[in-house]
Length: 96
Picture 1 (tube, rainbow, N blue to C red):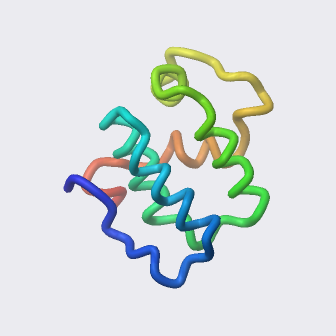
Picture 2 (cartoon, rainbow, N blue to C red; picture 1 turned 60 degrees about the vertical axis):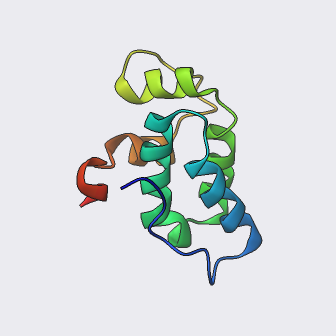
C-alpha cells in the first residue's frame, strides 16, 4: 500500500486537511504511521484530539519518528493520550 485507503468524502474541512497532512509528511515512514492511523481514526476524533493531532503535525519528522520509536522524549505539551494511541497503533498490514 502506498497511500490513503480512506476517502475524504463526508469529512469536514478540518479533517480533510489533517488526513492530507498525515499522508504527506515528507518521510515515507511518517506517512505510513500517521496516514494509516488517520485513515482509521480521523472520522472519530474529538475536537480536542484534532487539536492534539495538529500539534503533533508541527513536530518535525525525525523528532516525531524518534519519539514514536522510543528514542526521544517530546515535551509534555505535545504528547498525551492521542500520541499514545498513535504510538500503539499497529501499522503492519494497514493497522489490522
